[in-house]
Image 1 (tube, rainbow, N blue to C red):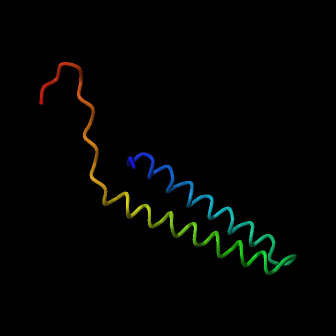
Image 2: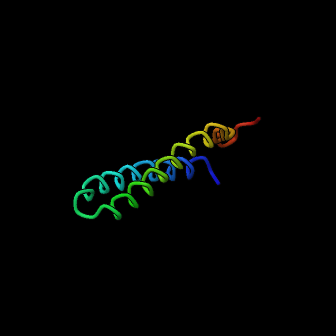
Length: 72
């Protein structure tokens, strides 16, 4: 998987997880079980996103593209 794809998935996971946690806070007074379920799922999603930041930091940097006619 390319580093660019990992970065995109990372931020979708983090922001999506935080959005779900916010939804859980909004539902906590009306439906407790659903709020807890969404809160835990959102927290796990956010933690996966944070772990992907670590994964991305361990990936080798891709070489910059060479200009046409440039030699190594």
